[in-house]
Image 1 (cartoon, rainbow, N blue to C red):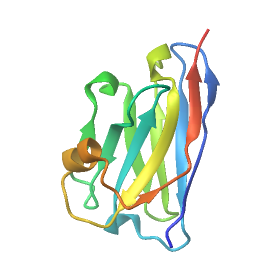
Image 2: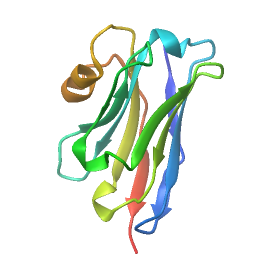
Image 3: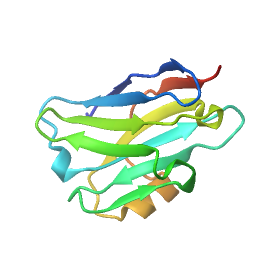
Length: 128
């Protein structure tokens, strides 16, 4: 059973930065998995923020975060990251990481939210 555990959330002022981390099960080869970050604000559907396919050559970012957020992975230690800069109040949400060993596109994963493995989420609050 693959386990994902997010960390790094918290309260930040508008314009600030946070880096979310997602630790995966020991021995998980991230270059065999598509990964993604998703978020869900109160009263809203979960949305795909950013996804990266297993080859590392295809990414997706939702329009609202382009130029501000960056998804990355460390295949050596099996950790997924989301660097979030220039944060806005509308970025406030619970953020989830996810992984899947399929071979679909980054767009597919982020738009369908059809990944097999999910973390429990970490709260990000952007407020002055």
